[in-house]
Length: 85
Length: 497
Image 1 (cartoon, one colour):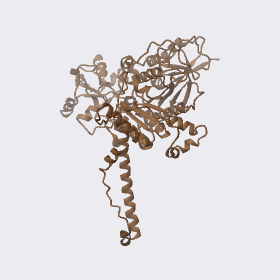
Image 2: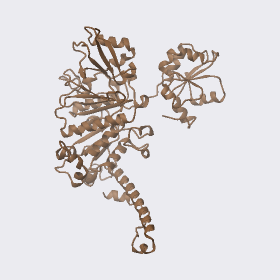
Image 3: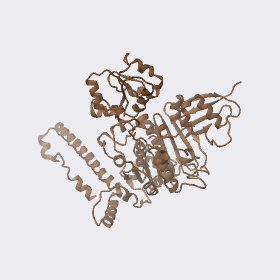
Image 4: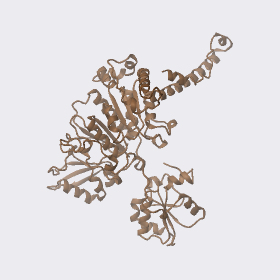
């Protein structure tokens, strides 16, 4: 059975991807580098935003430097800084 | 208070108060009641006017309520010391650093005012005293600062500093509910202070009418216990973060745009600073301001309320055990609020880490590549001879010169207002819709094309796109200053937004 993970887009990431969330097919060894590539393949406009965004996995801050990989069912949030007020 | 009495003496009461027995005998009861009601209404109006006048004087003193007189005396003393006795109306810096006076007990009027908080289990007199003896700095009297400053002032914060360099504009009022229509053109910091003062004279409000920058931020921030980031631009956010880390102040940061908002407390109880989460400032072309991106008024209002709440919790110790979090608000999502758990500060953070490389404030405008305000700058991407002024375009219209007017604003803006017979293709969509432009030349390949947008910025890259694709052999120019200038210089009836 195919397993999935979810990506949520906030603020300008939502504007660039034109959706507030996506489902991706899960596979082994999706680390943050692979994840970035998957995201850009689907939404090229995210390029400048991903570079400055914070990532959260299952509602917890994720350090992109760590040797982390996506688990089936994970919910990944892309959180760019919002500066308006 | 003598000065206030002096100021208010210029008011003349419009009615004589001679409602004694003499008139009573000649008037019917009904007429008398009516007359007294009118007098009452007139007097109430006078009282309101005087109160406002008093608040303006208080705001510029600056001081509040029971402390007004004492502070004014102190200030006069200071003026006498420093200016050889010359009076000064400077309401900014000097007074902010007058020592913040803490008290040991609430007054009876304060107890009456804060009664509902005083009887609140888990809050009570101790928390109210903590608030009274706390000073907070709200940076930005815009959409976030509006609700934040009002609630903080109302709740009973002892001293509230308000920073803003801007003036009140009619397009602010849908969200910046601390200002009002009569205060257009007035300094936002002053207007906000006035509103807080009208709501709660016990709160001492300090007005900082200035752009917060590296040269002045540290001194101002150090004078307060808690800093609230209610700004509207990236450069000031990094500045506030760094100054709060250096000054060891908790930073309650809020932001809002369109239908989304964020809330985080930085630099608090071992939690991260802004740079831990966002080490790289976003490229300026990806940053949208409220003026260009739009914002639903209540969204910053909600975030500002949350900032006030968090600041109150910090001041009163209500959030002792809370781990650091970021709250995300999405107005049109089925889950409006999400809370992201954050880590502790990053050991390698260049600001708050173990070996920080930033040890004093830097040039934030340069670091962020964007200005310290949210104003949209005028861009000059193409030479002036490839542009047309509003006046010249008006001549084209009057002379009925055949041409195509291409409006490259987003459809949502085009729907508000547009010039007659203009073709709307948003800049983003233009490269894919060039055929539509060609078709609109009506078989005249040398027909001139004029491009217009809101302010004359987006129209410039559009000119380049049309030129590079050889859309017409005639001229391609964009209108300098866009529709905003069209309204200012040619047609005052054309709406501005």
